[in-house]
Amino acid sequence: MFQSIWEDIKQAFRHGNMVTRLMLINGVVFVAVNLVKLFMVIFGGFQLDAHERFVRFMKFFSLSSDLLFDITHPWVIFTSMFLHENLLHALFNILFLMWFGRIVADLIGDRRLLPLYLLSGLAGGFLYLATAHWIYKDGGYAYGASGAVMGIVVAAGVLAPDYLIRLIIIGDVRLKYIVIFLLLLDIIGLANMSNTGGHIAHLGGAAMGFFFIRQLQVGQDWSKPVNQLLDHIGDFFLRLFGGGKGNRPKVVYRSPDLKKEREKVQSAGGKGWGQRKGGSATDQSHQERLDAILDKIKQSGYESLTAEEKEFLFNASKKRE
Image 1 (cartoon, one colour):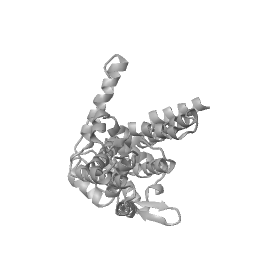
Image 2 (cartoon, rainbow, N blue to C red):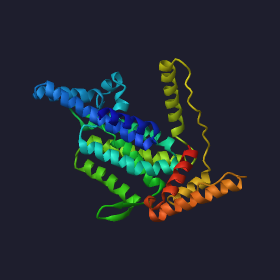
Image 3 (cartoon, rainbow, N blue to C red):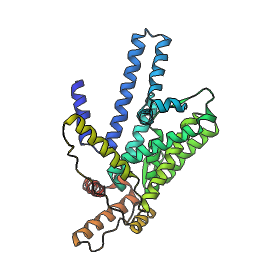
Image 4 (cartoon, rainbow, N blue to C red):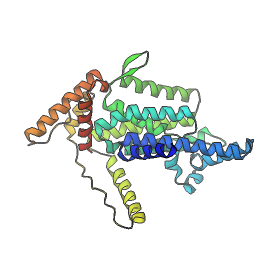
C-alpha cells in the first residue's frame, strides 16, 4: 500500500504543475519531520530530553536570529521555507498555495511561480533577520512557508483584485478584501506581540509579492535570473549524476507588451495581454478567446469556467512562460 502511495506522489510531482509540486514538497517534509519526532520520542523513552533533541533537529534546518549560525549553516535559508511541525500551520499554507497559487500561475505562467515563492520566502527571512536583534534577547529561530505563501497571496491580489472567491457561510468575496484581511491579521499580531518574528516574515514576503508583480507589469521579470540559476544548478547535478550533459530544453523569454500588461492588471484579470504587431488571424482569434475567458473570471470567478475553458487558460499560461 505504502509503495503505491509513494508511486502516486512521484507521478503527481513528475506530471503536476508548480502549485502541485510545492504542495507536495511541503506536505512530504511535514510528514517526514513528524516521523522523525515520533522516532525520537519512542526511542527516547518518552522523556523530556527526547523533545529537546527534536528541538535541536528543527533548529538545524531553521533560520536563526544568530547570523553566525546562518552563515555556517547556509542551507537554512531555503530549508526553513519548507519546514513545518504543526498540522494547522502546514495545512493552511498548503491550502493557500492551492487557492492563490493557481490564480497566479494561470495569469503569469507556471514557470514564474517557484521564483515568486523563493524570493518571497527570502524577503521574509531577511526582514526577520533584520529585526530579530530587537525582538529576541535570548535568540530565536523561524521556519515555515508562510512568508513565501504570503508573497503568492499578495501577488494574486495585485493581479486580479476583483477575482471572486466563494467562502463558506460568507459567500462570494473579492480577492482584494481577503488579502487586506490577511495583512491586517499580521499587523494585529505585531501590535499584540504574538509570534512577532513570524508576522514580520509574513509582511516581508507580502512586500516581495507586491513588487514582483509591479516589476513584471513594467517589463522587469524577476523570475528570469532565478530560473536561469535553477536551470544551471539542475544541469550541474544532471552532469554530476548522469555522466553526461543535461538535455534540459532551453526556455526563450520574451518581454511582455508593457502597455497591454498594465491595462490587463488594472482591469483585474480582464483584457490586456495584447498581441504582437503583425500577428496572424489565428493569433488574434486565440487572443480574443483568452480575453473573453479572463473577462468571465473577473465577472463570475474561476469556478464558473467550463473544463474546456480551464484547459485553454492553462495551455495559454504555458505559452507565456
